Image (cartoon, rainbow, N blue to C red):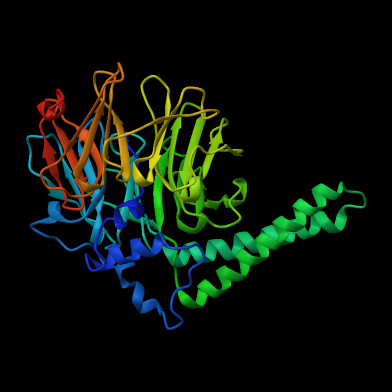
Length: 399
């Protein structure tokens, strides 16, 4: 299947503050970590978690954040819980039945039928029929309960390790004490969230298999499931992110898994996410996406048109420069071995296998967040103005 990743927080930067209520929440997700919600927040403010997405004749014009293509259909997700699907590029889009109307940020499929979508207010959805209908697997209140239980256990574990150690290397003790302080802070934050409500949007989902799924999100949220989403485990302690920066995108190739985020965060796991290392970042602004191409090169991209490629699994990088320094939100393989990039201000770029770069601007000028390639070579784009198209000839040669 064709997969591509995008961070919904990236799109929100390009929208006006009044574009939509959900876009405002996305803007908040791009703010500094640990930004508290208002003290008078109540559970009633989170009705969108449980309110089904409303059927709309113009659902394809909603803000759409990500699109994917399985062997059977194309599926796109976005604002107000909108999910639209079609079996082929020649058919009309149909709106899916969705049990939540939160801003949805990402989608991924393990096979043609089984997939997951994630979004704001801690919502995780699952489909078993290729995206036609969806069920809620987790919501923000359940996620808070999960946090309280996890950090309580982690505090107890770290305290026990410190108390039982009669002899310990000073550096190791410092590391444990630092980890304990972090766990205590997160436990206290989770307790506060019990009163205030969920504030952590999920920003990306990766299905490694029908059973194993990763979810990354704002303020350092990082979850893992090994049973198809029936249960979830918090694994944020596996990555070095003490400032709680946003984890924007996660992608895998074989046993290698990569994750990028705010302030140049760049992580690599070579054992399918069991352990993680922090890589030296070539850029200290936000990365919005990560992609492994057909040549197994690693691409990372994001703020102000910064695009980097690595041919050694992230040990070193070379920069690619576009004409327009706009946010780059996504990349996808082209059938001929090249790559497509999409970004803000309608930017669509094609990098040939030989290294020739062609850059165009879509007539809409809209922020573009993702794309798939149709059988005839044309592009289906999503973003600020919903579903858009571009013929394959548009990037055939330089102007």
